[in-house]
Image (tube, rainbow, N blue to C red; front, top):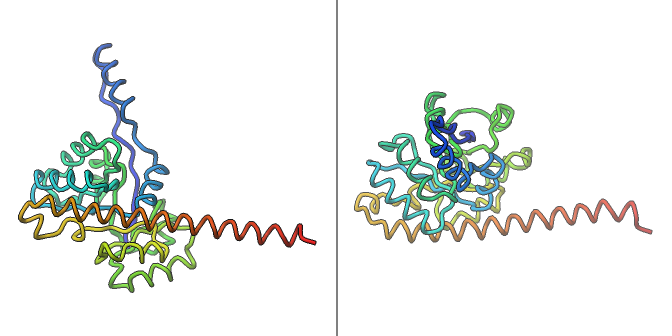
Amino acid sequence: MATVGFTTLSPRPPIRNPRQSRLISSCHARRSSPSPVQTLAEIERSGVIACLRADSGDVALEAAHAALRAGISVLEVVMSTPGVFEVIRKLIHDHPTSIIGAGTILNAKDARKVAQAGAQFFMSPATIKVLSACNAGARIVKVYPVSSLGGAKYISALKKPFSHIPMVASQGITIDSIGTYIDGGASAVVLSDAIFDKQAMRQMNFDVIFKLAAMAAVQGRKAAERSALGEEIATLDKNLTDYWPAHGS
């Protein structure tokens, strides 16, 4: 499994003169970093985290632009991507309303670097238990490799004792199966090749990536909305059940 950690934006640069102060204040007024709670809420609202790895920074940027323009709102750039920190900075600048994070963080040094680059979350693979990850501070737990562990049924089984812990399903998930995982209890799914198709990436066919991303974004939001409605109905049923025994005739 893997945990997901949340970072804050890097500190503001030192202010050298009043004019620069006004420029910096203006810049930060236009874009403030989302809080961890807001980031988690957007992950759950979108239902999909697009996971991007590429052989060059330029290809990564073009592919990410295509996915984000298509409706993806949460995107993770894998650390092995050349120029990953600059890619993250550029994406945050160009897509200020999107949630941009980093993936496969293996040590504290890299975690600090992605935080300084502006990443709003990071994912760190670790072979630890769900409860241990939660107790260690993870706000959401990434279950990987989910398809090898039993797929959506495994998520459903995990959620029974750990209903209070948000989980993201990752590995081998297709666009068509997004709803199955979220209906099974996942807060969101991670899609890699399902959006950033290997052949399309090799051919730099960003139109294909746009179309795949658009389909994934729609399916993710539909499933997330259906899940949220189900939770509201369940809460209402519980409230009614609790009310009538105490107030009924």
